[in-house]
Image 1 (cartoon, rainbow, N blue to C red):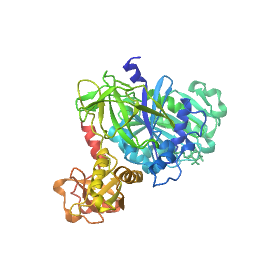
Image 2 (cartoon, rainbow, N blue to C red):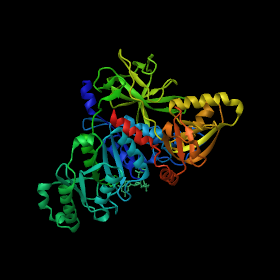
Image 3 (cartoon, rainbow, N blue to C red):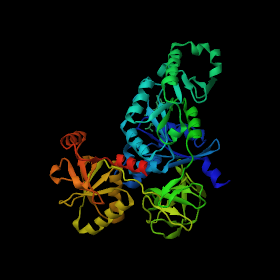
Image 4 (cartoon, protein in one colour):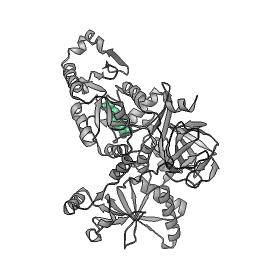
Length: 527
Ligand code: G4P
């Protein structure tokens, strides 16, 4: 098969949602379609319980699928599907955000009884800033939830994205009868068992038991309203991340999942060209290239390995091939490669654009590094810096260890494990992270890799806003709204909470307070 054909088959995506919206249940159903597991509950059973913070390997072991099985891949209807896990709950970290730089599409699962929740919003912002196509699944229709119109309006206003309902539900909870499948012009009937019954629109008049129910009539009226007043479907908008097709159903029942998955797989894009220092690189380019979006330390409890996750962007990956590291221009051989399938890891022999390869990292890689073959050396665009949410002051317990302390911090910050800030005048080291897990891993690695016990003093959750150099007035900040500097020396205000931020904006309307999510979006769309 040619590279072009291989690339065309790839569908690489992540599922984003708030905890409990149904991501695990949905992933499991997809794995069932791909015959990757035999029965439901297989993935679920591996879900994390409480973990021992003192032992990173224990964290690894107990968290099972959410940490180690970061990629699931399987063939489905002629496609090669790659699902990347976006760890949530207490595993939420910058890696969760960075995973989204390695996918070509995203499935957003929303609990229809709740609507958009905090974590979905955060992840959505990353998709937005990268223009990733987003497909929405409104889950838990088997329960009494919010009105479909209400849910769609919330997406449109809160997320500022056009919606196009691909399916339209008839009732919900106990009255749930099924969905109109607008795309395939058929009614998908919910019978309570796992099979989906399809009735073409043209044959609906043969089912009076369905069409004469008040719930059906109500939904039919709603559907005509959607047909008349709603936005038209435009695949170009979907592919630019400006319109989201919305599907209604239940991941648990399951209902509407197959209709959703089939349509999604057909519509979602195969890998597209990617920006680099030498311009756009086509996935069909003969030369291999890829970039590292995640580095995982100590994945295997028996060895103190690190594994770097590479998203293949062009050419063909082959086990044992020689590659060049774009950053240094040095060539070396990739001895080992693994690709992760459910909880067991298989060695992968080859890969094409869209595939994710795990390679052994002898401590040379950094997040964002480019690996490539061919005469020309280049680098893929730097991964964006994501705004941290929690901050802690870090000190070495033993001052005699300061040399290792600084070395450890320097390297871990370089690697992208944590973000570093300094407080002017105080010279305090402050580390910032997106989730608690990053601090735990940082502490563990400082101890085990650099032999330094550290002390972490929490400043709690803060809202960071970057300032313009000519607008910085140090007298406006104190312990409450703290002023710090990032690694490049940019001044950053850490606001205590939303109220403090709003109060500050009121008092100083002329100051520009920059939200990294927005800056990233700006630079992405203006390139
Ligand atoms: P997550 O990975 O996004 O955190 O969510 P997960 O799939 O674990 O689902 C969270 C809970 O919601 C689970 O219930 C799951 O069974 C339930 N759920 C998922 N999809 C649906 C749906 O379509 N309808 C209904 N009614 N429930 C759904 P749990 O009680 O936490 O777990 P369990 O004991 O049922 O396994």
